Length: 170
Image (cartoon, rainbow, N blue to C red):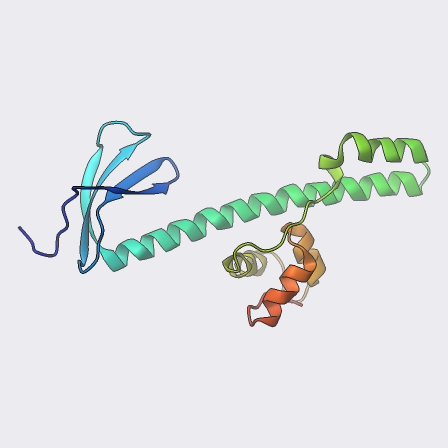
């Protein structure tokens, strides 16, 4: 048996979407044997992976998953921003009354209002930067627009900028 191989005896679990991978502590080992099962069902397959490769797989998987979450959030927020602009246009053109405007906001705030929060993970700023590079030329969006699109408190975003994290644009 390979001395670098760690056999599962007391598993630790890493939740990867619908897949749970179990492996023991890896201290001092360069390889891990994994036994994979989905939704706590019977073992589907087992494999051995280098620890550094596994860490890279986890980072990549997290990055792709988080990027997808942030893209979906951005689309939902852009829809809310569009709805809000349409409602404001109707109000300014007097096609709806003050009361209808207020009623729309009170009855369906989730259609018009973007909820913002502090940045929980500064790594999100890097992922957001990658997303923006794909969809907007550098400098096209202001930091307050980026904050609103991704549900981030503007001041929280600016603090990350001040600590050396960068986004394309301003």
